Image (tube, rainbow, N blue to C red):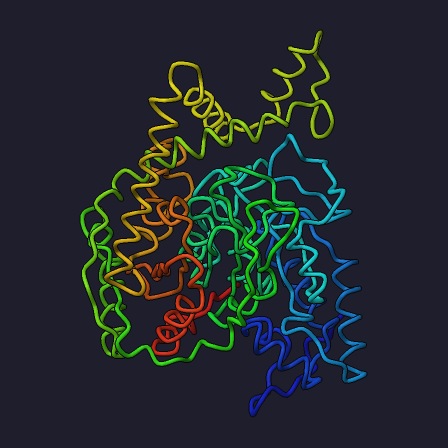
Length: 504
């Protein structure tokens, strides 16, 4: 066990390893390469922090300590030999618990998979291993990634580290809370309608949903296959860019994977953005936006103007239909994807069935939570005979029109900005009985998934209660370099990312 009284030298300042846990992944990497601290010490200190705080926060469903320490030891051996290392080698990471990690549980925070052990690695997990990134544990989420608050986990609620009475956002709430509370420096989540960007906004960190197909979905438990995308969380734009580099690339096991070279995203962050056309989405600055959120987002526009960018108004007239379109397409695909969880080959099986049909029915009734059941029923209805054309087909047609809205917008602007969410983190329990109110939380994020374009959330201020406000930046498909550059220039021009959670 690491001795917290031992001081390490970091740059010109002295600090103990507890302070280093609060630093960015880049700063932690520098400390490792300078041999101010070992990877084993860093990973052990992360687990000590988890032991101290995670009973309260609930960020993890399970831990992977033995393998994480094995990876850290291998990193230390390479550093001792002065061998070249991947950029994020030795940096602790939380893996969302709907992404397979061979030999460890992948539950999707559902009772139906409570004891399921992954028989293979997801492609992103293989990439993490190849980059020698210690996987600390499997992060809690809304069951099957269905939710905006991380209150739908079958096991425990995740609490926001900034205020334990508030939600962290969902569905990747455990991943975001782990990074915000120093229980990991990095995390992976999945984003189907905002499930990376919303928790990043609520927890005051950076989260990025890549272009659809930029990162392999192989080994991700599917929710809505035409919308799902795995993406990174970090404490800075640079951390997020480095992790995106590590996980991106073509994968023959994913038929939707794009066979294109992966740029070195972290190299082009500091380019001048003078003359960049920043379009603000007027529909997301209007009615229903919390005054503190609107004020912070408008201040962000002024920051871009001060950096030499040109501010233009953009209208997305079909944005108002995005919630309806999303909740037809996503639930329809979910009803199909989740049909495999029937108690036959793996996962929970009821003990009280008299015949096959009763086994199916009781297994699914016992194994799925209320929100998952709600979405399966909605999706099955939308796909049923006599309703397919009226609902699913029409939703797909409007989805194409929404994409065309974005195409026209990007003819006028290089990036689009808006508040990530109309509000900051809300109280636990305040929306759980009102599904429609919960769904509307995603009004700002869903359209990017429908269009398949990349989106990022980063801190841009705080509300009157001290809760973080997130700024969403959107870019055309495969323009992650432009997106990250614009985010980095904003981050370095402001101080919001420097304010940290203070844990008791």
